Image 1: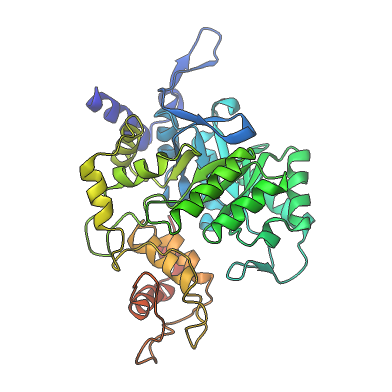
Image 2: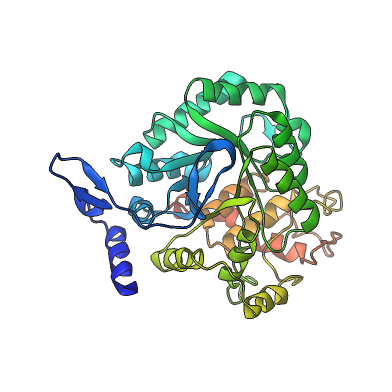
Length: 398
C-alpha cells in the first residue's frame, strides 16, 4: 500500500497533466468527482474551517505539481505570502490548484504594509488603508482567485500595532469586499502579547505564531494560546521544527518528535509545514495519524533543547543594543536558519535583504560584544550568512 501511494504521489511531481492530476475522475455528467484521503482534522476557531493537522507552507515549494500532489494526498490548506519570490510563489500555488473545485481547498497569504519597520514593529508613516487593499487585489490576481480564505498581517508583535486603527479598518474592509473570508496575524516575536491583542480586537479570526518545543516561557505561551482560542481565534503554528537541523553541518532533528510536541496542544488546529519533497510529505502525513510521543522521541528533543549549535533563534531580542553597529541580529539569525535549517536559500536571501546589510558588517570587529541568550556565536553566523548578499539574485530563484 505504501509503495502504491508513493508512486501515485510521485506521478504528480513529475508533471502529469489534465485529468491524471485530479484526485478523482470525470463522471457521466463531465464534472470532477473528488475522492481525497481522510486526514485527522481540527476546527480552526470560529472560522468553521475543518482542516487537517498538516497544512502546506509553500515558501520552499518550486513546482505547481507538488502543490497538486499535496492536495491529492489530502492537504487542504495552502499558505503563501506576497514576499515569497516577489509574489511568484503565489502564482505557483494558484497554478497548482487551478481547475479544482474552489470549495475543496483553502488558501492563505500574508502581506506586510509599506512604511512598516519590521525590526521595531512600528509604522514610519500613517498606515495606508487603500494601499494595503491594493496589495490584496494584486495578491488575488497572482493566485488567479476571487478571494483567499485567510489574509494575514505578518510580523505582528506589539499590542499597539496589532490594534492599529488603520490596520483593523483594512482587515474589516477586506472581509466586507469579499477579498478574504477571514483575517489574522502572524508573529515571530512578542507572541504572547500579539495573541492576546488579536483576541481582544474582535476583528481577527486567525493567528499564526512561531511555536515549537524550544519556545521560551512555555507556560506563558500556553496561557496566551488558551486565551486566544477561548476568544474564538483559530491557531496555525509555524516554525514548528525549530530549524529542522541540529546545527549547520549536523544531522537533522527528529522532526516527528518536534511536530508531535506542537500538536499535543489541542489549541493548535494545524501546523504549516514547509514540505518540499514526496518523502517528507509521506513522513509528515503518516505522523499525524499517531501523535503519541515515545520516550526515545522525548530523549531526542531533550538532547537539543539547550544546544548552542541550534539553528533556531528565539527572537527574544536580548541582543538588541549590544552591537556597536546596531545590526538587526534577530533577522540575520532567521536568515541563517532559513539557509542552513530549511535549505531555503531564496527565503534566506530575502530575509537578509530586510536588514539592509550589503557586505560582511563584522569583518572589522576583532571581538564581538554581543552575548546571545541562546549561546550563539553571533559574529561567526553573521560573517557566514552575509556572504549570501554577494550571490546574484537570479541564482537563488526557484
